[in-house]
Length: 397
Image (cartoon, rainbow, N blue to C red; front, side, top):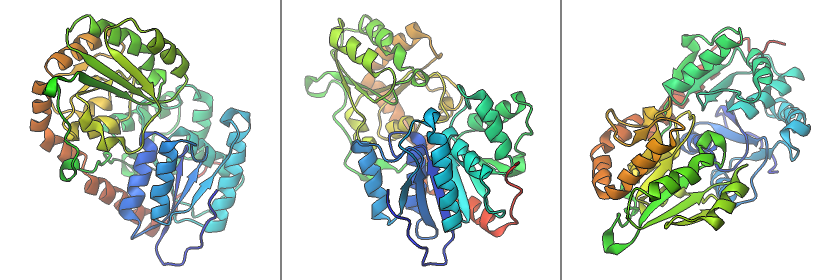
């Protein structure tokens, strides 16, 4: 745990609360916002589950240290085994000690931690911003989610997509809770740095006779469709004669199952399962196709980064994720439709160069919608509005 530093400036304090420093779009957004706005705001990070002991966690910690941003860990316990209570207590103490102008929470575990902290009493002028990163909220914790929503009903909301905002309203309605009014809700699309000024252009499919490179990068969980990967890849391999190399990057509950499949794989494709890698965006142009068989998403940073790198994305046509792509994008398939995903992947492999050219033609759409400066300005305006406006009635105790 990094010690909290005293604020020696007149800049507003912003406390970012994330699940952990590890692979995840929410964590990337929080770091990117801090990097963009640190000259104007003093940030502290509270990582509920601490810093992951891997290359991704270490890289994130280095980025924050380069900004002199303190990082405080919440708990080493499992969330369901007392970790949520312990993290809530530590977050309560941190808020009381540092008195941030804004507490910015990202996703359900940080929201639940703040709700626990609120039960112990928080400053009455506390201002909270929630960024909603997904379209399906509290899928396994419905009762806890209802309680948390009631606790944080006075918070401002920023959603990473229109579908994510509608997902929040849908959950609130289903639980019989008041909906966050539109006057306190907005969509701020995730911003991605434009890699055009970096030397990231890879050698594309078929060049120099090499195999087509297919990438899956994400948590190895059902939400990401990781359980469908063996069937999709097996079926696709039967639909194309191209030589293919598949790389699966991630950790999660399905890791053992996928490792067993990779070791016993009978397809002609060479498949490798490896841990997540830091700064993946700088390497996406090395791949010819990104595969995303997600069941639901809030938006998906890796899809945006791949398109900016000129790499076609085979994805599911689900709310949130579908907002990434320009109208008429040709490589989308229904969620959980293994035959359709396999056919789309095989087509992308056979015509990888052609689809890459199409992605480059659509680049202006991606740059315009997912502009890093626009995202930073969106959060800047929310922070300023919160710090200058009257304190909300945040918590229902």
